[in-house]
Length: 161
Image (tube, rainbow, N blue to C red; front, side, top):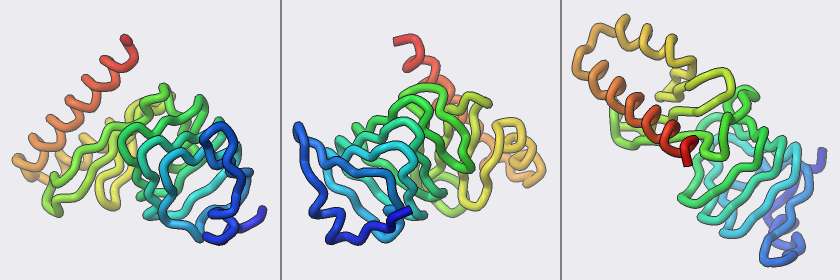
């Protein structure tokens, strides 16, 4: 798989207002401008960020800690976090500055159910609740449980539209 440099990326063609990004390894890049469109089987490294208006074709995958700006869109079958498949085109909900480290927490709406990325933790809703209970920190449990409830509400609202 070809590993793209920033210069190669900058020189990719623009068609109908979108930068066309063929399959390849984009791990050397960290920030992508508005209007990028990535083909199947693209891969991105940790800590990537994507600007408003990016779109990702079927089969794209993203490494942990990738972040996405408002209005990014994801085609069917995009995968996140260890190849889990997104259930809808609204694959995740994020909330920022929560928990003991005030970090961003992601709630993924996968075909396999809701999964959570909170700091080093990544797991199912069931595993997340078990971890919270095992930590024996009532305030943290309440905060994360409320964030989970909000994520579930957002997912059900989006699916009903």
